[in-house]
Image (cartoon, rainbow, N blue to C red; front, side):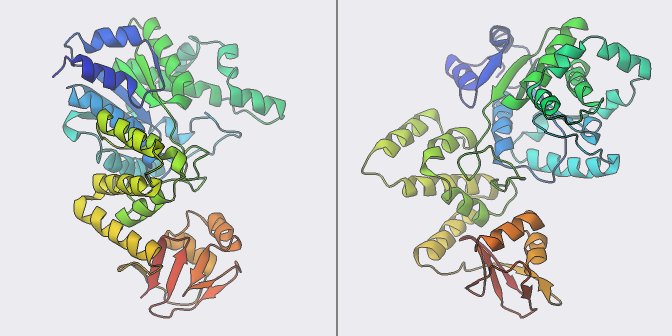
Length: 397
């Protein structure tokens, strides 16, 4: 099905879409009957993907369902020094082996949404590792210093008298060259990547290719309902998190983002989402009930109906009856250990700094007792229950 219907074309170009560059050309390509190469690139810099990333992957899956190929570019070269986009200081260089290991996690998680049969996985080290010094200088010659340094984060750093690594303005050129190497027809990205992908359009023209269209999806807000979803901010919902955790985190969302989540991270039809939006405006509807439908849809998408039902039952048990979940993850504690370290190691917190913040904010309980001392020691007593917030539990075994 390479020629979409008018309804399919409308949904493809409007749902989960913030901005399209080259829309006229993209429409022509989509109605030409030709199989397109849809690029998405990712630098493996963290172990896990969250629902913010899934917005892009759902859009990519829409292209696949129309018969097109997604070229999933793993930045095994570019991830070694990292994209400077949005960064207020130079990123630390990474080892190639570390990047490759994280890439394997990325691919496995991405393919829970993407169709493996219509996904072409490429590593940009295939072409970037082969560039000679002369090749790189010639590539840099396609751009001006002023063009690359105009980026907002570079301007902020200069005003704050902070360093800019000489390699950092080169990054967008390399990302742009990926589009040339794979002959990209279109790329699907978050809005924060538009600058980099515009360099791809520039280079494609210089190399005699038709410029790729850029389809940018909105950045999904996290569980705080304010800032974009990010592991470093602790407001993320992981693609591979267990169903109970996903369900609980969705239920913690502010009511104001329920409709956005239905539209961005589920595959419910547009007509059903329109009905949900209407319900949310009705004084007769409790937003909590609609949020439970959203939580169930997310848990079912990644873990299946049975796991979603169990997550829902546990949620009702824990939050409506103030009980504990029927099943909890077990943790093997062989000797007394600091609560801060235990939270980070068990996954109840993303890092030691987050663990300390949770304890200081009185969000951690040990056997139902609130612990506010970051130096608290947990004894290896079988059956001890450690709880973070209202929805995350482990039990010592």
